[in-house]
Image (cartoon, rainbow, N blue to C red; front, side):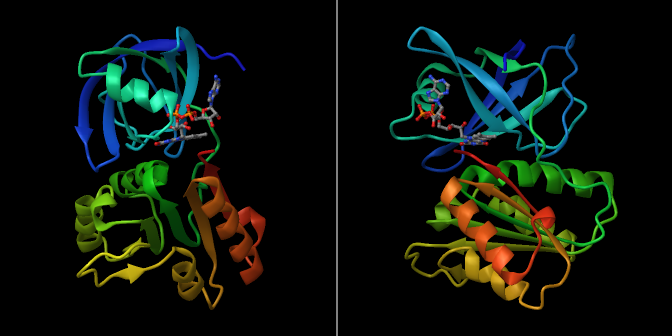
Amino acid sequence: MPYEYQECTIVDIQQVSDHARIFIIQFPDQHTFQFRPGQFVMLNLPLNSKYTNRAYSIASPPAANNRIELVISLKATGKGTHFLWEHVEIGSIILVSKKALGKFALPENLDRDLCFISTGTGIAPLRSMLLDLFATNKAHGRIHLIFGNRYEKDILYRNEFEELRKSHPEFNFIPVLSRENPGWTGKKGYVHPVYEELYQDKKPAYFYICGWGEMIKETRMRLQAMGYEKEFIRFETYD
Ligand SMILES: Cc1cc2nc3c(=O)[nH]c(=O)nc-3n(C[C@H](O)[C@H](O)[C@H](O)COP(=O)(O)OP(=O)(O)OC[C@H]3O[C@@H](n4cnc5c(N)ncnc54)[C@H](O)[C@@H]3O)c2cc1C
């Protein structure tokens, strides 16, 4: 499907872990960019003298300043991310799809728990949803965010989620680390036993899963084995 693109400006870049950077993108005043939390954009990047698309979820909630935030991890052999790392700096002009894409979005009526499950930069669309829910004061129940990473230093937006946990008692932030981290007293291993324990009584919940394919496949399989129906299991796959 062809996309229409808008020239946008990179107004900030932050290195937020060894492998991840935040890119803040400014749309020009003449193009008001609208999106639903959970959606993504296409970047049209000049790779090997040919413009090629790469999809990135929007990590920020809708805001009046016509800006979006992306959080991207560098892929060792990746062409698009190497271009972003080596050729994109503050002030660069970049082509971004004029419209937001995708159907990964919360339902109108949040009449069940929300259980967010992600790994790595899969946090992006879930952060957008979460911040929007809190900013708009939309009625919601309990929210669990289960966030898997290898190392403590990889936990994106950690301070922000910890602060939100203090100010929103209904919000439960559960980082999970899969590798040896000296001194770590939180959850260890993979995300799967965490939601299996939290929802062993099968209480009503919407599950929102985002990240790479294997984790999503496994999570969907396990949730269905627990008895959750497909309509309550929503996901965005990065590959
Ligand atoms: C909906 C969605 C949202 C995503 N959001 C994020 C995010 O928020 N953060 C993040 O870090 N990653 C995200 N990704 C992954 C991202 O799109 C890239 O796959 C990742 O950054 C690696 O890109 P790369 O070019 O460095 O790697 P590469 O290995 O060069 O390419 C990665 C993928 O791009 C596609 N591709 C490769 N060559 C071409 C080509 N010539 N034409 C068209 N497609 C090609 C292939 O599907 C390939 O698997 C998302 C993916 C999807 C589908």
